[in-house]
Image (cartoon, rainbow, N blue to C red; front, side):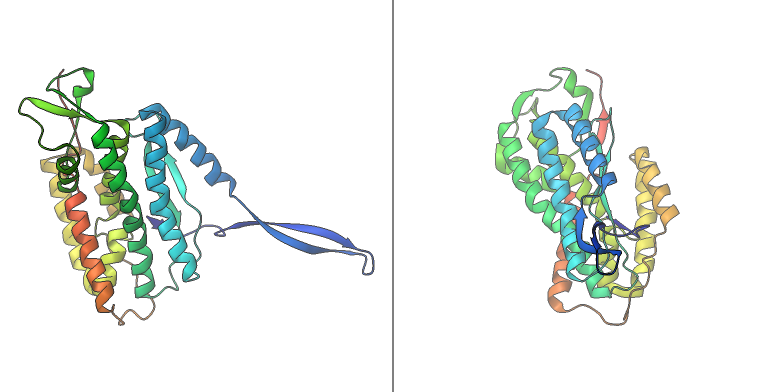
Length: 294
């Protein structure tokens, strides 16, 4: 996920030295340093995710999120688009422990192709880590009777992709039983869930970049229809989505225009864009969380 920056992408510190000939100080070297805000947020997210699911959950989930955001960051730097290092978003005292991560990017001088490349780089990189983490986690999970323990008070919905990975790693679950997820499997579930959210084809989300790259200005009515469909889904199936609907309305469903908007994508990128939108469909969970009585 990307936003426009409100400060320089990278913080720098200048080392000064005194020049006795001129009697003035001059810059001897410039060193980059890790931005303080990102460092603090990363540490807080590490702690909040450890509290939510343990060390293995925390490390594996942060690996997925970091890979996702660094995909955006490195692609942006490749095109010399100003971008920050990731801002991790801690959510203490929740089952996830985090709201994901974002980078800030100034894409006002980027082309349609460049925005597309930056948009797809994150989710494709993240899912490369999320899938093996999920498979390993499911292999470590246990099959237990339905209603087993207090964990069953919270049930996670399954996306098509998670169901497929579960079938590959654990086989069919016997009737009357359920899979008690290992922390690694839970981290994989959350990683796929966050990937799907970012791939919503709306505004400046990753999916919005992909849709705009594919269709240009013709993407706006489709993004509006997607937002409307998402709002209906929230009202009918999962009211918890309404907060995200309001945020998307606030930030806008329309993708800003890029330089050379009339220049479309080549066939290879079009294929990648279609596959990325398919990834959204198979990774999305309409009812992610439900609560049941033990």
